[in-house]
Image: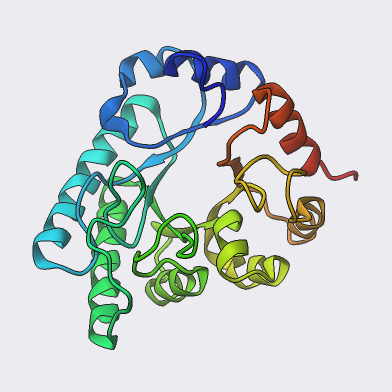
Length: 250
């Protein structure tokens, strides 16, 4: 989402040269050996390619491509693998949209994610379930709200399944971000950020990310915070704003 004027591998180098980690989406469209040769620290990548948490054929494909993703992650030493409540198409839209889920379907999703966590344990890998928003970017995605992802991950309570708590999506869907971080803290593997509206770097919208950064420091949060947003202008300036927002004075 940054340095989009450059070829992909050059985007990775530009971020790495700033001393920052790199995250990638669909690994099947990338030359992983080329990316590994950059020496970048890959903090996460997509942890499945197809499938979903609810349908019999979707569950099988979800777990199959999750295992394939573990193998791929070893090439670039990506620490965490990201998943969603359902498969998303190339535009980030739910392939099998639904407006609601039943109690039985929620239990099915729990079972699928429990099997995913067991797969992570078997291969010493960590999967993360990311919350999304329904109003702007991902309508019809089941288990999209942070409330849903926290409920699912906490009910399984396996260290190989964590939360990717995306505060951009949460602000659109739920708000109350400081309290949300406090509630989710035991299960967070990563936090992703972008400002609202516009999904750009901190300082371009309404979210007080400096306040959230101070809360994270108080909570002794020591995991990845990732900018998953577009640059409002120059990408280096956007990264300056991101780093400034999450720099807390001692």
